Image (cartoon, rainbow, N blue to C red; front, side, top):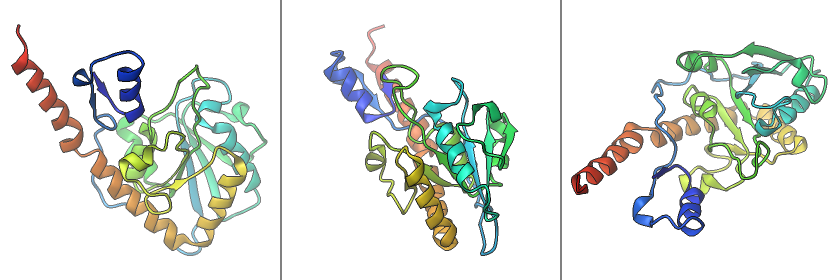
Length: 236
């Protein structure tokens, strides 16, 4: 069994009694990313472009934190220094607060994500766990965030299982960790608006880190090695 989060491995072994020899932990999932220099640099005087990218599984998108995104956008609706865009199957009917400053881009094919997300500076992903069902959770980061980071977006993420520690991702260096509440998100966005040099630095660090974590040597080759060993040891 391949698992992509440490706590899933522990659950299989400790709760379900799966032999540890049958479980292999490899962070993430194979995603083909473009290894290109980011071009979404924000300069002094530029408008900071914030994007939310996720599939909607329930009205309002609370599991993905769309309610927090829309409330954050509503707070900044009179601020010309920042704008908000949503990628995915959302509409104004999902907003938790009237947010006249949200642009609804619609759904994007995976093959077009890099080019589309290259136009933004920050991706906001305030997702929550156990809302779609008991124990339900998203990957850290989500696939959309992985694409966005590779395209140069700074990652603003909830991290309810502290997965960043296992991955060597440092808060304030490679990404910005946010609590699932509007106040924390707004405060940290204000800090980034006032220090765009730091915004660019964290975004670039995160881009390099994501490309490292999703390199084929870590994602594909490790899985192939496990399968080849299993085949060699098979009695079939």
